[in-house]
Length: 319
Image (cartoon, rainbow, N blue to C red; front, side, top):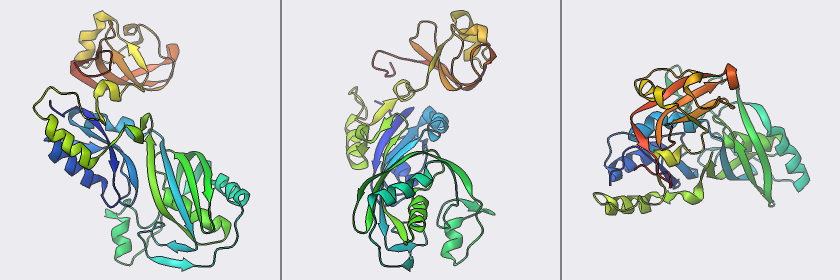
């Protein structure tokens, strides 16, 4: 069995960077090309989606998926990084907090919000990472960015902590929400722990630990055994995207990069966004395409063509 052109669902441990996870996967899977589809802070744990081979060119499709997190906000201290890895910059006694008070404050962060990234982050300023500038004792002005929080809720409240669940879009810093929540409640706060539980249709329950995956990959290499848990072939990994069927006379032209016209499709698109383009018999994945608009006003633009169409069986695996 080879492990190119796959999507890997990893339960990342605390202390490991996303790039560190990519390096370990590249060695374990014996592949040349691997990458992640949205990083996870070193101090956070949970679901990290990694891609190999051709799948790395589709990783951008996964970046826009909403993410779900479970986090613990610790009251009483604030840090420069807004999480437990930073230096304490403020401390104060924690007043008695009612659940209704915290829930009301949390709702300020629901919907589209402007969020100022923390100085200790991987964003760049004039070619340098912000965390490099911060470690050198510097600070620069950061422009607020518009991010979306689909939902946010209080799960549990202790005397000096709050457990929260949230679902958010790309670019959202949960640790900044923890810091800002403290400000809204009038008490210093930081994000003590964070665990990513879902990325779009991918759930943490489907993932494998890196150690278990490394062992399974070593055992499966060169055999015809089924893929280890947490390893998806492209058809299965792309199932959440709606499908459009290409009429048989247009398949060859599409495989050579011709942009599909609406008349090449069996049905007109009803949704905007990325779509799978399937062969007329529905058994082969020909390409991924971006649909702008819908119905007769839709425009279809190829994102990635598979020169050798990926055959899909009943289980969604590559044949």
